[in-house]
Length: 113
Image (cartoon, rainbow, N blue to C red):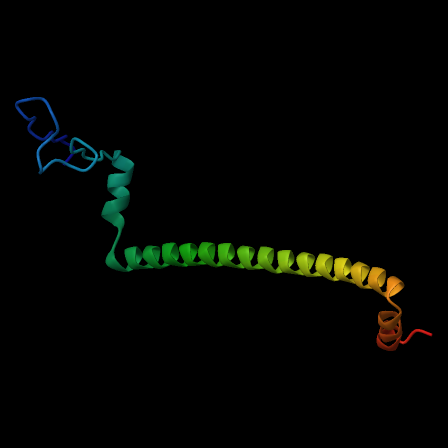
């Protein structure tokens, strides 16, 4: 179980054959005895519960990322709309000062004298 397997090398020393692992040579993970005991204690129900916990954690992380992006988009839209409204209000006020017909219309809209 803990033996390391090496694929046969090609005679030319070039690329490994078609049965070689994706990352190069085949490696076996060697766990310490503590982890062997832990894996031996696991049952189907415990592994299923662990799998559900991991799935819930991943789902919460995805939802947090989605809501953070949604919050940033809403904040950006609000700030952009406020800046645009302020800019357009300044432009309208500048035009109203210079065009008498617009000044009369603006007085009707805002209820000025």
